[in-house]
Length: 242
Image (cartoon, rainbow, N blue to C red; front, side):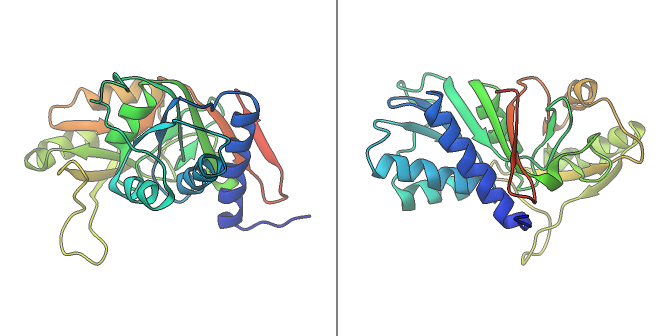
């Protein structure tokens, strides 16, 4: 038995996903690809850069979801474009990212790294969406163990908090680490984290929360169901929905 730890599972999931997608022709030369944020997405970006460096992939155009990923692409030689660029034209062939939780229907919570708005713009404008994850991210229901991130306008914190509490959530403003005060997103907004005692309907709640005035975006991802590569402790990788 391999007995892989969480970090090893993340790398396995990411590399297996990239290699499988290249083999199946879902990642190809000339494509427009969205690249996610966080400790599972970055190994996927690294593997993509290796395919570019060895000539397997050419003329790949990446759209990134955060400054973190943009910096990694600069270091590793992955060309980065804006959604506004004419060659991108507001749509992607494929997006690949991590998840904080993924349920049995491949609904996700994302935003642990506070990049959920850009991640959703990328994921929801991709023809194909792929999640890479370690086994701890696979759950039966969303939002009861890992808090749901909601990006908000700072001025709206109190009324948004009240509305989220009416929906049964315990709501906490996310504080910065090694910084005084709240987390500020790449978009200049704040994040509140919401936790429920009992399971909620993620597909319904995505729309309900997004309808609250002052909410910029919610971390439920239910509308563009991804394929998923979930690495296990024993060294196997579960592939869903490909």
